[in-house]
Amino acid sequence: MQVSTYMKNPVDTPLRASSTSVDQTRKRLIDAAGVVLSRRGIHGATTREIAQAAEVNEVTLFRHFKSKEHLISAVMEKGIAAEIELMDQHSSWKEDLRQSVSEYARHYYAHLEDKEAFARALIAEARTLPQSTLKVICDVVLPVRKRMISILEDAQRAGVVRRELNAEQTLDVFRNALYAGMLRNTAGYLPRSYSTQEYIDTVVDIFVRGVEARLGTYRSGGAKREAPTRNPEPGLSKEASAKLEALAKSETQNPEP
View 1 (cartoon, rainbow, N blue to C red):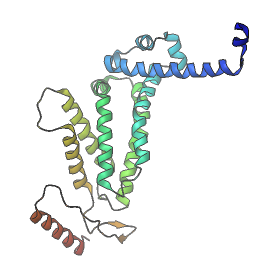
View 2 (cartoon, one colour):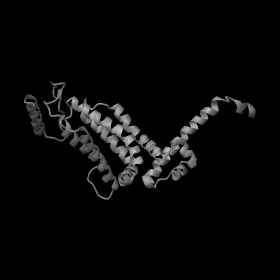
View 3 (spheres, rainbow, N blue to C red):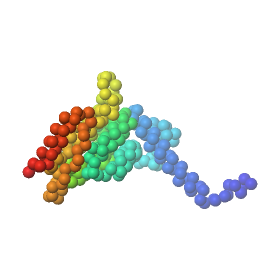
View 4 (cartoon, rainbow, N blue to C red):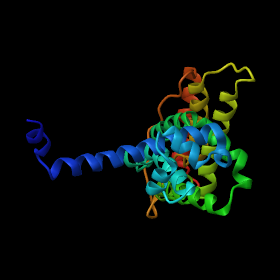
């Protein structure tokens, strides 16, 4: 009976088990690297310690990753995968700028908060990292950054975002406000009178108000577009809302050249 059980599916089973084992080992190494890099920093983390945390030997680590830089790349790719998924779901900011920006801001802040230790290590060590490590980091981050810029530029071409703005600078202002806010808020040494969500909402509100094209000036392909309906601003009195509506109508009737 023992022989019969062992010989069942002699080709398929070992191969399948081997493939699964390799994938599991690689995942353990990436997860362990994320923990060690966050705790020790990029300089301080060693492949030996990462291998120990993954419960494999260092030789096994190098079978999966040629160098520490390749392992760092895998950690960052895993971390940025959720942001790529969000961009896939909201690849256009033309239809509803505020909603798209708000959803991205919430996700991006949560991602930064989850990777706070690694984010702080990267900021602290960036100037002293070797060029090979910096290149690995840039190779992962730049494609995502370029895609975000293209989404913003697309909204500019559609007349939703002000065309005179530099899309790259505009994106940096927005993301840096969230990045700096996360670092300040998680430090915990200064009291604050607002919640994290209130901070994110304020960043989104200031950003959208600053970048959205003025009513009555939207243009696409040289043709003037109808100004979108402006929803009543929350918390405003009826008198203030009426003034805003009158201003919107005035801008529509007398657009800028």
